[in-house]
Image 1 (cartoon, one colour):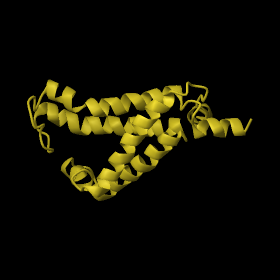
Image 2 (spheres, rainbow, N blue to C red; image 1 turned 90 degrees about the vertical axis):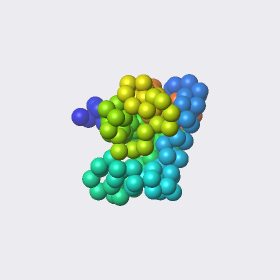
Image 3 (cartoon, helix red, strand yellow; image 1 turned 90 degrees about the horizontal axis):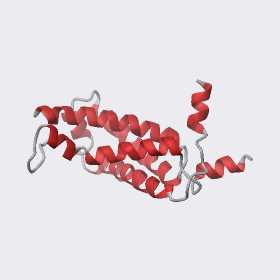
Image 4 (tube, rainbow, N blue to C red; image 1 turned 180 degrees about the vertical axis):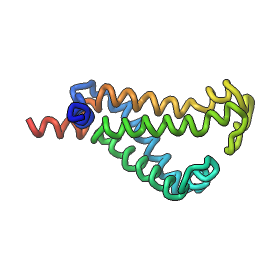
Length: 159
């Protein structure tokens, strides 16, 4: 357990400065999606209610706050591995809770506006943003935040 926590809280920080591009993309999308959950109820509480989540208001607000704070942390490269791990779990839940019912044609959410509207190809089309967020989070978990990050400054300040 100690080794795992050390791995999570002490990512490699010697990575290329260009890693910031992935952090900017991933962090900004999570950040604005978190804000949208507060601004548009159909993206937050309404969506969580339709999907059958328990305590949808609490859950939607919790996820929104985590996306806003976590998105900012990724933008600045702070606790990058911890936040990336959380976002990986969140994206797996998001994909499983929305795409299986889309595949089966039983989604409580509005179907895509144009064919394919259900089935395998609809899932592949509709999951593209989820897939991108999942894979960029996996990348950041494995590679770390790079040298342009608060994690880098934190690690080198203690040396």
